[in-house]
Amino acid sequence: MSALVVSRQTELQRHYRETPKDALIIERARTSDGARHDPFHGHLEIGGGRPGGVPELGWEFGIHAAVGGDHDLPNPGHVLLGALAACMDSTLRMLAERFGIGLEELEVTVDGHIDVRGALMVSNDAPVGFQDIRCHVALRTEEGVPAEAVKRLVAAAERSYIVLQTLRNGVSVTTDFAAH
Image (tube, rainbow, N blue to C red; front, side, top):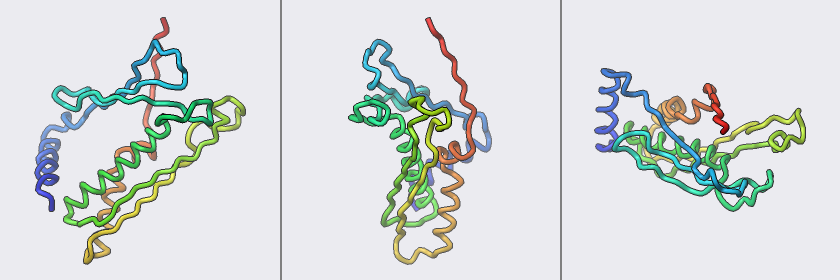
């Protein structure tokens, strides 16, 4: 078992049991190129929001060719699917270490299927957004890990994926437009 994962998470678990309000965090992402005249590219900043925490990190994004973009940079769909893949990967790795299960191989592939006619307003009958998302996890443990332990790992991970559970269960999203 990894001393690092156990030491960090055990203390957090104890703290959040005693002080549940501290478990409520805010994550943030924002775009910041208001003056840009290129509708197919922008700048995304993520992180921040916590004193002494992750500094804001940024990267350029583009728009998919299927909706008129150049498809030369990661697009918002990539970011969503990447968040799901990264969440699955990191959750499995942390839980495997907590459970004392050695991983020989872990690869997460996420594919999202979209009919872009809705986004382009070609058809009111075509939905806007991903119609389905498929996740494939290739997982190989060290030799000798009992099948029951792998089942326990997969069940715990599936329950703990924050991004997966958010997508499956839905979340309230509000918009506030401040037009000047």
